[in-house]
Length: 315
Figure 1: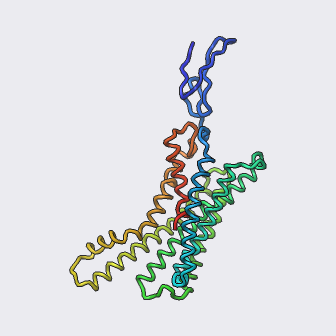
Figure 2: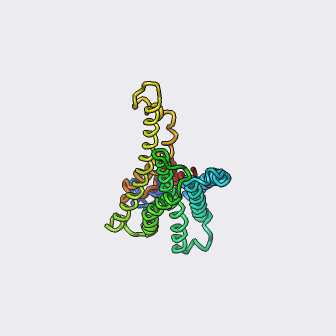
Figure 3: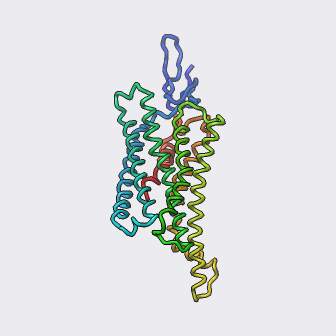
């Protein structure tokens, strides 16, 4: 009796047993090749090659963009003497280092040196200290630096302090922030680098919750400071203008003209949130890039994953 083989399965006829059977592709199983093999990652696409190409493009953009930022900040004494200028220099340096580490990690995965083929421990260690530091830690630190830049701008606009006011203020703010950033980065490395540890344990959940809370706090500081700056502009225009306009109308006008100040936090949200929301969905049932994935879904998911590293490529 002939059977129907689905999902590109090949029908094989066994002359000795006088019967037919389906030889399924690597992603499916069952008599008719209808069942996806659970928890198996995709094998039909060259993921290492695609990650390498995307990482190469983002690394070039990062070196170009952050390099130009460093050149402007270092050459301009007026920018370099401000607290915000110092934050920008640190931001650009961390972005470049993180991007290079991430590119090295993807390059090693793509080239796969012969001494790593059979050494799983070395492979996982390199993946942890290169990819996790370059991707998660660098992005996390850059998010906090962006929040500090926005907070510093709000202090300048909303108070009488000067742009190059006492560095002690920025040092105090930076030290307080480091008390949150450093422990979170250490926990992030421990959390991301523990291979085979189920994410459903209480310890891993608490660690993940703490990391997300600290990151959410940076986002709140970022967006709130930006809104405060815009509202202060509205108050000043309302107090000193001779044209009778409502605060709401002035606010809408300024929002249209100065929408660019909201671009950095919006870019962070658009780059990081999609993967953070999509990744946990059905995580325990199948991998993010599961075996048998379609071309369209594969391309979309790999771009969503690589979007999380875009903030370190732009300043």
